[in-house]
Image 1 (tube, rainbow, N blue to C red):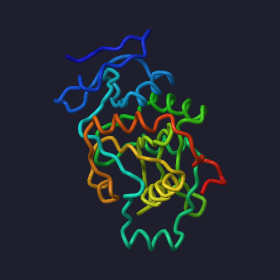
Image 2: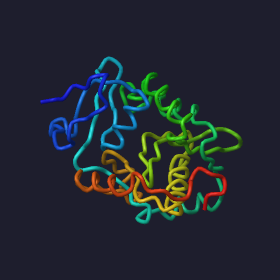
Image 3: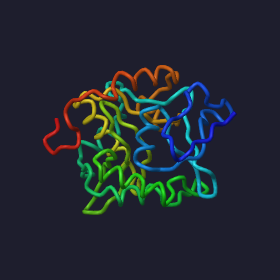
Length: 229
């Protein structure tokens, strides 16, 4: 049975109670307050819904993740990175990145990055929790991604690209920066072939939960500082 959250409690049901069909649906309701969002990620679930639907919280099993040391970069993408086709920055225009990620896609009907979601993650960015990576070309924002950093874990949310390889360049630069800063894992949420080509793989939900316990409160170098490795 699906659990419904109330506004006066930040508690989520145990991950084991997530439905098998649809895979990983854990709860519905609640709100997008910063406190609830942080509680959700720390618990091992995330919001995903569209306008007209109730707020839905998911914890799929298995979970798609990328261990930074397992990053795979194709030869052609390495050439692109060496040529310096893109200038990659961190936290320079979070608002523009999340707006671009929310824009209509030719292959999708609607967006899950609703106006309410954008405002919620903008607030997390103001609090230094949500971060963006930007790819620029001739001064124009042409790709990027955003997500949350908690402890030694990064929770990826969405990416966009307006030029070939732009989001890929941003992603690889981020993963290499996180690896150098001793991050343990990048949460990719659900399986895609695109992420699998970078070395991401699925692990059981219980293994993902164990990673949360080990690394959520670890401290280390700040990847978002200009002096980061």
